[in-house]
Length: 128
Image 1 (cartoon, rainbow, N blue to C red):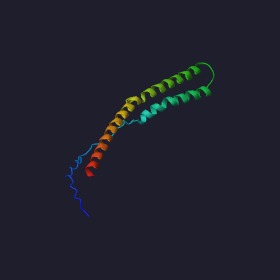
Image 2: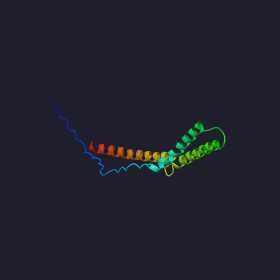
Image 3: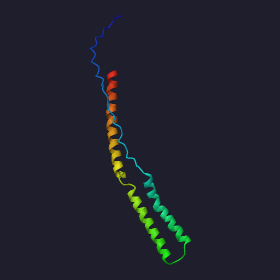
Image 4: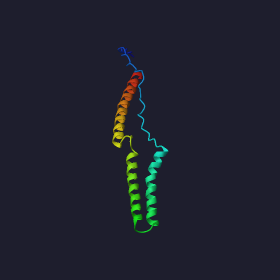
């Protein structure tokens, strides 16, 4: 029986294992809606005025100046609801702006995810 001696080449050096930290920034903070008690009362006031006008219409007399008063109260209530509806969202970002910010952040996360996967692959190659 013969013995065959196999001469192997020298092993190539292992790839360098990446080190260091991969900084993951915190997500951007969403603006909070700060509603004060006075703001909540101002939102409630036009609705209560409309309720009072409805009660006055059904409980009151017919005709005369009374119907004009009830109509005026209804008008003031409607204008108040419009004013509080438009004023309640003041200072807050619109839905389109929020969606654009969300899209940008998700794009940033996908780039970060790609970097993490590449780093993990290089570390795995360096260990095996």
